[in-house]
Amino acid sequence: MNQTLFQVVLTVLLIGAALIGGKRYIDNALADRPPVVVMDERALVRALPGYPNAAPADVQRLRAQVDASARQLGDAGYVVINRQALFSAPEYLSVKP
Image (cartoon, rainbow, N blue to C red; front, side, top):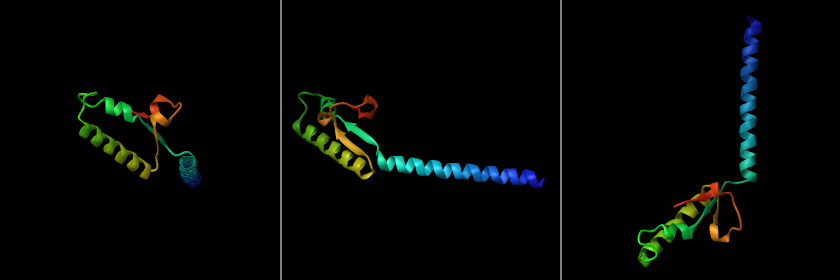
């Protein structure tokens, strides 16, 4: 019975150490490579109802929302890149309208 208890305690300790090590690895990886989001402001403007005849006030409001969203994502630790300033990126990184 003592051997069984020892094995259970050892297993729990090993699992705990693995979880702690895994978390540290992920934290370090995120610090080295922060998450990236690509925003396509042109595509968002084109998605406005009535585009290309959308009201200028609607376009300005959308651009203000895009800027605010980009700042919020940046404050949350994301790198936000405008699609027009990007040469190439995987499609899954893009924010779509």
